[in-house]
Image (cartoon, rainbow, N blue to C red; front, side, top):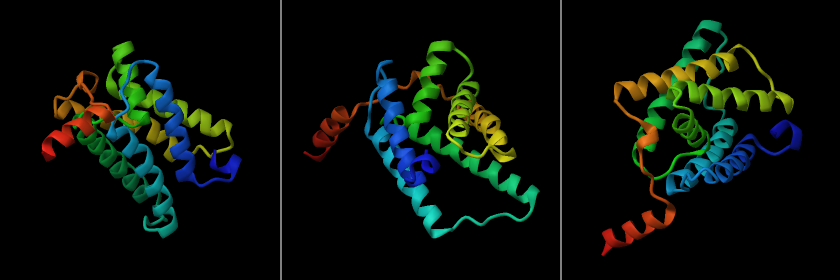
Length: 175
């Protein structure tokens, strides 16, 4: 989308996130403070990280693969912690949870399906698909599956708060 429209990758992520969240609300998913934060913060940080150029480019293929896998593991841990908070899930995690709930497929398979769809759409819009992309599509599902299994976490069973519920609870807490 960024290549096609000329907008930043972060802004493209935010727009895509909004579209996905609007779609999943049709399935009854709640829009929580975590949902909104995920959409905005991921987009902002993508642009900030690209602008600051703080992640080194690996000149070595194997080191690059290790960096990629570590990043995917960190994503899976982050997904566990913020989904468990029950403040709403971000766009991709929302789709993952909806697929898991509706199809009963393992959560990792559902996440890989979401990433595969994102990859195909990105490729159709002119994006690159390389070895790292393919590894990411498969490995993120594996890491999500393993992380959730270690913590005995069932994301589809979490009852998320919507934004109004969170604001009301915050107001009560501050009294």
